[in-house]
Length: 444
Image (tube, rainbow, N blue to C red; front, side, top):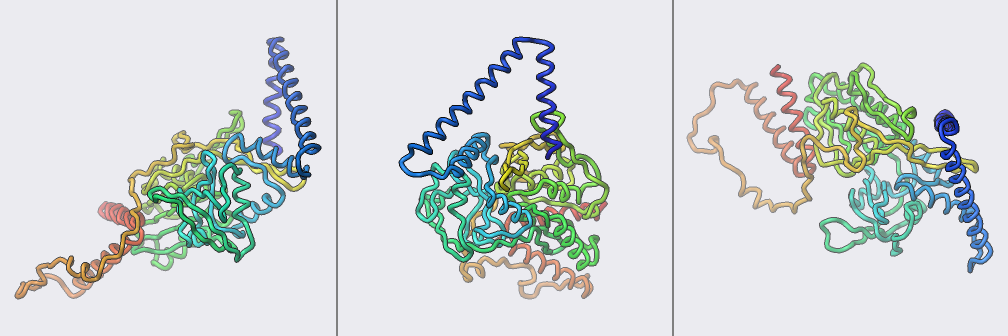
C-alpha cells in the first residue's frame, strides 16, 4: 500500500515541476485551487463547531467526523466507504469465511438497498431472499434516505434474534415481509458434487479458502470417478456469487488456463496498472468447462467468467452478470478504522471493461420460476406408448444382455437428468452442453 501511495504522490509532484518550467499561469491556478480547498476546509470547521455548540441535542463529536468522512467517500461511488474499527474487524473476519449475520450481499441503487446475492446455506437464502430484490424496510423502519452502512447496521444483531425485512420483487404486485433468524455464517467457499458424469463446483464466494477448496474438491471428485478421463467435464457454478478477493479470482481462473492474461487493472495513473497472467497447468486437464452466471454474479465472479470466456476455455451459460468492474483497496487508518476506496477498473483479457455492462453468456438460459407440481394422475396420463407396449411386437435379438443392460442404464441416467431440469433448469442445461462437448472430443 505504501508503494502505491508513493507512486501517486510522485506523479503529482512531477506534474507540479513540469508546470513550473512551462507556464507560470498554471502555477498560479494551482495556488488558487489550494486556497479554495483551504477555504472549504475552514467552512467545514465552522459547520462542525456550530453543530457541536447549537444543535438541539448534544452530539458525539467522533460520530460527526465519521459521518462526514463516510459521506465524502460514498459520494464517489457505491463501493467506497469508511469502515469504523468494528466494521474493519468484521470485514477481516468475513474474508476468513466466518461471521455473524443474515448471509446477504447488498449494494445501493438510486437510494434503495438492492440484494446482489444471498449466500449459499445462509438464513437469507433459506428465507427465500433472491438476487435483485430490493429491501425497503427492516422491522418496519424505512431504509430510504439511509447510507448503505446505516442500512446494513440495522440488519445486524445478535445470533438467534429475529428480523423482518420488507422486499420489493420484480413480478410481485406488492411488497411483502420475510422473517429471518440471524445466525453465525460459516461459508464453505466451494461445494463439490457430481451430476452424472459432470463435476459441479459450486463457488459461493471468493475468500481465503476458495482456491484450496476448489482444488481439493476437484481432485477428490476425479479420484472417486477413477480419473478425469471418466468425467464429461467441469461445471463452475458462479450464480449469486457476489465476489470477494481479487487474488482468489485470479487463482481460480489460472487453475483452468495454461497461458495468457487473466485480468488487468487500470487506475487513475497509467503506471499504476497491473496485468495478471496464467501459469502452466490445467486442473481439468483440457476437459470441457461450462460456467454458470446470473445477475447475482459480481466482481471476482466476473473476472473468472470473463477470463475463461475470452480464452474460449469455457462456455458461459445463464444470464448477464451484475456488472461490477471496479477494484476496491482497503487502506488502514489511524484508530484501527479503514477506508475502502475504489482505486482501479479491471478489464478482461480482450481489454473490455464490464463496468455496468456485465459478462454476457454465450448461451442465454433463463431460470424458470418454480411451477406447481402436477397431479400424479396427470403425470400418468401423459406417458407415451412405445413399440414395446404393443401386444405381439417383435423382440430385439440383435443385442447382447450387456448391451441391453447398458441401454437401460443410459435411460435411467436420462430420466435422472430430466428430474434435475425441474429442480435447476440452468444446471441441467449446462450438463447437456458438457455431454455434447464430451461426445465431440470422443469422436475426434
